[in-house]
Amino acid sequence: MKILIISDSHGVDKNIEKAVQKEGPLDALLHLGDSQGSEEYIQKLAKCPVHMVAGNCDYFSNLPVVRIVEFGKYRIMMTHGHYHYVSVGPHDLLEEAKANHCNIVIYGHTHRPLMDGTDGEVLVLNPGSISYPRQEGKNPSYLVMEIDESGEAHFRLNYL
Image 1 (cartoon, rainbow, N blue to C red):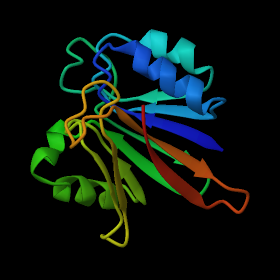
Image 2 (cartoon, rainbow, N blue to C red; image 1 turned 90 degrees about the vertical axis):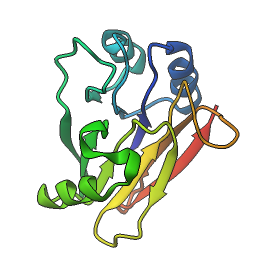
Image 3 (cartoon, one colour; image 1 turned 30 degrees about the horizontal axis):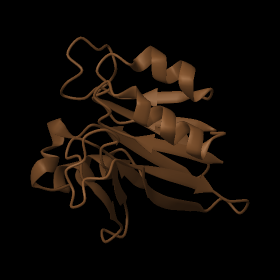
Image 4 (cartoon, rainbow, N blue to C red; image 1 turned 135 degrees about the vertical axis):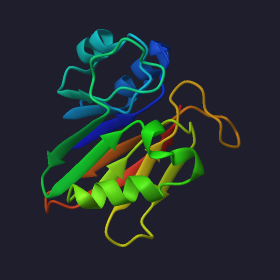
């Protein structure tokens, strides 16, 4: 199973197109907010189930702020992160993920990629921004989650 995880596209759909083309075919696409009106386009482009949450720039969106999805043995909490103060760290996010019995939490908002398993209970992931990156080098980034035949998840951080 192959899952594309993106965030903070801010209406710049050409980078989503590149990632989908590079990584396809996909079994699911997860968008962590700030799609800015591209929700329907992303769903058509992906050609697979799409799960999305609202970001701080999705002003008139009916998308949820938090969504929980399950793939195999993994229970994943998705959120943009702006209501969880992720700009100062993932502490509030970790606590909510644990309260919801999730073993993975994914978020956006900071435009900086992160893969952190130091908590021991919950893996914390941020794909960065596929359109407006803020990390050193400023390359648009995304994550791929692949679940192998034995049910184990593997993650890759990729750059366009």
